[in-house]
Amino acid sequence: MSAARPLTTLRTIAVVAALPLLLTACGYGSDATDDDKQTEVAADAEKLSADEVRIGYFPNLTHATALVGVQEGLLQKELGGTRIKASTFNAGPSEIEALNAGSIDIGWIGPSPAINGYTKSNGKNLRIISGSASGGVKLVVNPKKIKSLDDVKGKKIATPQLGNTQDVAFLNWIAEKGWKVDAESGKGDVSVVRTDNKITPDAYKSGSIDGAWVPEPTASKLVSEGAKVILDEADLWPDKKFVITNIIVSQSFLKDHPDVVEAVLRGSVKTNEWINANPDKAKASANAALKEESGKALPAEVIDPAWKSITFLDDPLAATLNTQAEHAVKAGLLEKPDLKGIYDLAPLNKVLKAEAKDEVDDAGLGAEQPNS
Image (cartoon, rainbow, N blue to C red; front, side, top):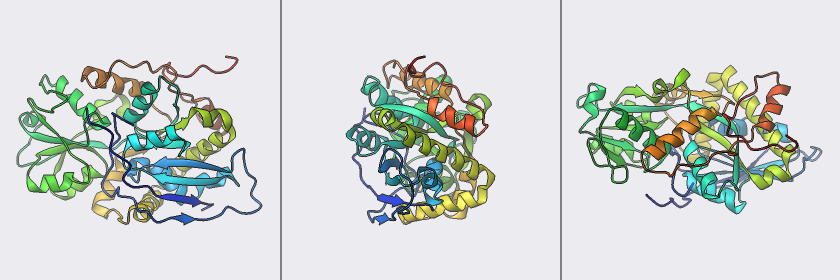
């Protein structure tokens, strides 16, 4: 399997009011800038148990809860005088490494690096404490070469990286079609071409790939170049929901600063509520954040369809994470993991209960609670 990509860009911001084998995908417009922006919190704002909380996320639409929560000050509002220090990452392993090194405390991240980070540390470095987003992954193809799903056989289809969340999903779909592909090399009845999402549109235009199984907004970028959506991954899942972004926390930070973790979760819940109540404003806010983070906003023909395919929610959809792990095992990319304890949803459920919202379930994969 491929080694982890190094952290290529890191952008640190402090905002007021206003993993190493499996990777999440980075999307179109995900090159972060190196300039710093700091704004102090109000002098009279009351701090929680920590002076600051260091959060990490990708400049991707599937991480819009973090993008919008920071951009609109919804996260900072819940933290009072505890300042946010945010860093953006281009790859899951870099974010997991930052969490392990203590450079960040809380992160928005995809299921595969969360699973890998948890299993590689024997369950000692992180917990998943909330969901954030579902969906936003599509199989898009050259309509001149591929007119039906059966036509995918014999073609060259890109995924973001060996073993990443979309790569595992595509390999599982291929297996369910009865086709054979060597997971490591990508060779077989379908040629699986691992291609960075930033390069995929050019690869499609050059004809070196015939399609791609990719997250948004890369899928909609390809459609803007003439590709056609032939399958939405959501259609393969019960209720058309599967986790694409979780919130993770360092176990030590969760133990030492439960009030800060709860405040971040409260801000995340309120951000998702605001996103769902104000989809157009939220889309514009996310795009403004992307432009600020990466120097490149998404054009309307890309962001509009991409935004519609993503569902923002607090439920981590734990059963789907377990299924994704099973798919990776079946593909030969992961030894059967013990995921018992990967979730601690008690802080989230406390927040949800206070907000008169339905509590969420950990599918039997929760950590043991004190005095339980």
